[in-house]
Image (cartoon, one colour):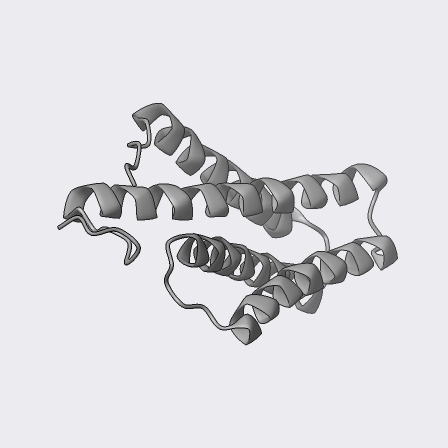
Length: 141
């Protein structure tokens, strides 16, 4: 199975998306007039979402390449991502914020999540290219 190398433009855009999403979200938190415990809640939701998104990407990719991934881990990854989105949604619905602020956090979260997944994909592709790692399904060496 031949892998196509990720373009420098896509890899760079992925990093920019991740940095803008996470940076914007964190700047918004820093400047927000919230209690410290509320800021901590939104920070942990971001970190939890990023971790679960990257975990899903890795699990899906491993399965496609024939690397064993347990159904339990795969299910927990999806459950974690859905939980982080649900917790963010519930938090924003109940927050005493302007609608524009709520939208800012929602879009920052989604942008950061997308960026993290793309960066994970590009990192894995680059590692594959650099080390010439082949999936267990091929006979190439």
